Length: 83
Image (cartoon, rainbow, N blue to C red; front, side, top):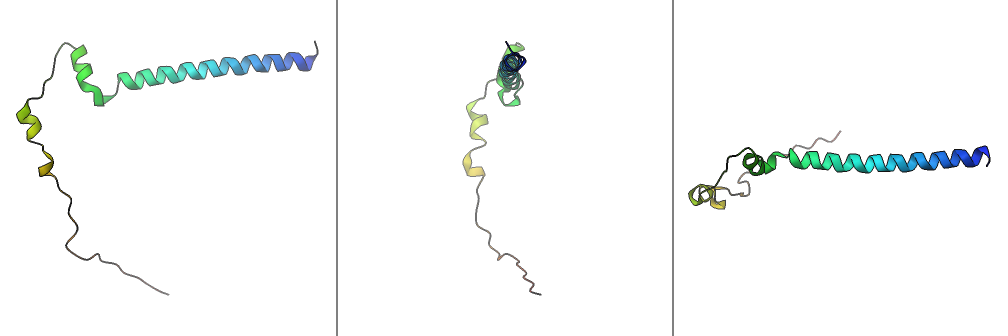
């Protein structure tokens, strides 16, 4: 076996090891992000022993009728300058 062949073999092994480490790091980062996501607070509160329920009166208080988007009634102030 020549020096070039052994160097290629070592480089191939190193590349495979780095690929495995990168994949494992991605899985760990995904698991940490999923576990610490503040959007899933109900899961965290259940794990702590408390439960949270939303009553129908609470959910109805923030209906879509409270929020509306309408066009502006005034004309935009646009200034152009030509030099």
